[in-house]
Image (cartoon, rainbow, N blue to C red):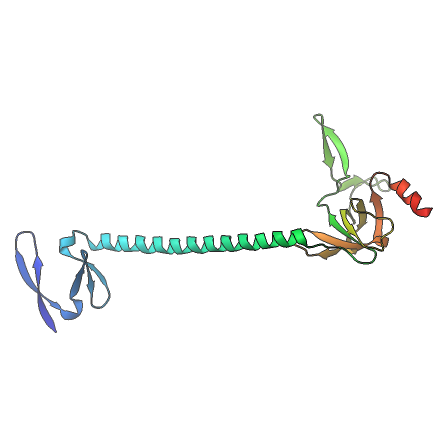
Length: 207
């Protein structure tokens, strides 16, 4: 089916037959085909390329805005969860049972050898050493773990809160608690205790 449509040109007006399925409806300088395609009116002064570009920009900005809104919502949710966790941490207590010791291991041994370089003391980590038996360079493996004592169970005799202890890495059991990096180790599995007045403390225990 066909119909006649009046088209305005620069110097004259002429009639042209177009299919009804391609007929357009004016909408703020734009025309929409009945089929849903976007077109541009001659009177609007925009080309199809310009209209397509504007539509692409509008779609891109809309998508970016949706992503930004989602990110802001996620951040707000995480902040609210973090606030709840902070409130819980201020009220909750964690204490090991029996003779277990709650510790927070160090990332590196704080008692490594110190060397002076340019007047500054720098910790020199292990790793390589000269084997006295073979005289060759050998690799040093650290099987011990160093940790701060956070809490002690009621059955602990020697270890106290605030001590630094050495124990075998395999003896520590991770305790997931608000990402604090805690472990528990039984007091008999602790090899060394470091603190001030340790000898006097232990001597008093024997009395």
